[in-house]
Image 1 (cartoon, helix red, strand yellow):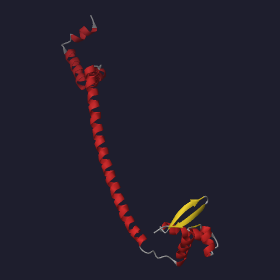
Image 2: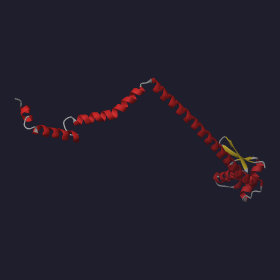
Image 3: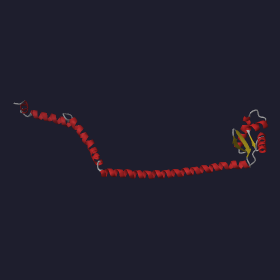
Image 4: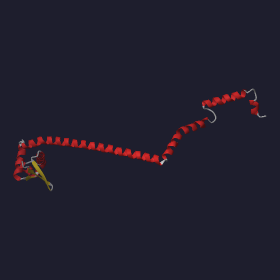
Length: 183
């Protein structure tokens, strides 16, 4: 006789015990083959939907629908960007117009000051008179006329008068010539 047959034949006690052990092992998920089964279940749970999606992507109709959707979205994005750029351009032109008005307003008082008599130190008045007599003068000529030791002081005075709008300036070679502006 075989050993299993002898064990099973004793009052049926062995059958109940082995059945309980198998049931307890299977219900807890631990036992022979349970890890393989869990991996298989997980694979079916995760990969099956992905495999279905991959199958759908092989269909040319689905691909065409996706491409059409992408093209439509791109067109709407381009329209949106065009609208935003137009609005930005409008705002920039508005800012430019405001800046031009501000510059014009700030330049207007300076122009009116130029029409009024400008009070100058006596040295500057003498330089202005000298420039009007000679028509064109350099810093060296002003230095000799006023008796300065170097031409830096004469050049600085001429440059300041040019900035005030009283003199014009021309570069002739290396020399800078100043002339009286017609008022």
